[in-house]
Image 1: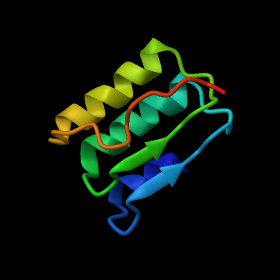
Image 2: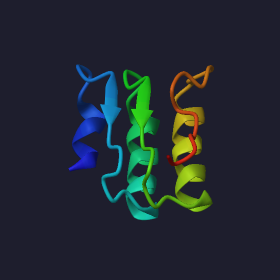
Image 3: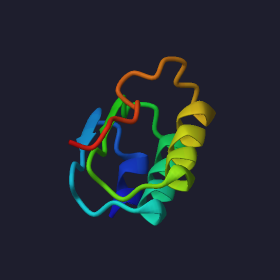
Image 4: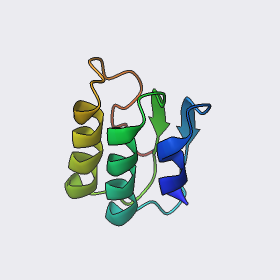
Length: 78
């Protein structure tokens, strides 16, 4: 399902807060962000993503030329 966002240029913001997102899905988001520069906000608070998944997301952001973090910053779980 997440891979569908790779070619969707209409969506600019995605919220998957407390949605059981894990490292595997974090890696999928990384691949999506490599191909889709229109997503400028990805909120994944309160999920089970370790540094492995966060690194994949960060690599996707960097590979696509997102110069500024926008709303890709990790946030503390509440």
